[in-house]
Length: 210
Image 1 (tube, one colour):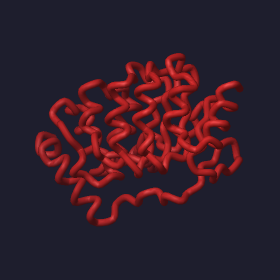
Image 2 (tube, one colour):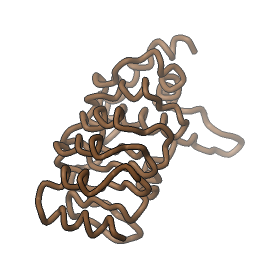
Image 3 (cartoon, one colour):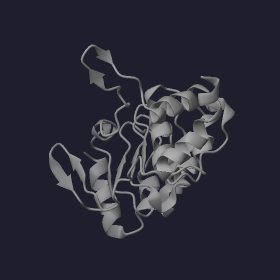
Image 4 (cartoon, rainbow, N blue to C red):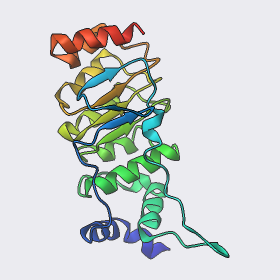
């Protein structure tokens, strides 16, 4: 098991080079409650994004007659990385899809902290779904914003993010879904910072009143 831990990062890189994981297509439409939403940069305050989190379930071991099969090398590596997360300072050298899986697993296991979130700076993550996750605040937003144009969806529901933190997302131009229910520290000023286009500001203002 010690060898698996030592080889975690290297094994993940080798696995990806063999085509183990495929990235979600950037033009894939978001589906909510059976309704397709293909409009880019539609920010909402009126609905939760738990449906998005369901799109990234925790990897499950395949069931076979007579028992459960062993987890894959990928699952073992990700589990070991999450267990020893304090040992890693950056995942930016990993392929995006693998960094995304590690990030999702840390959220699932409540292992993401002020310190460990820094390891995901400049990882080109597509989905940062932190709705109702404890401790999310402005200091996390700089890391989230560092994902740049790769970032497609963000859930900040129930967080302590303020207008200042939200404004850091203004350069993440490909965001398709942003939800922030119960974010009492976000006002119309913060929405105006990220909307840019007056028409989008009108949509944001209307959504905030729902």
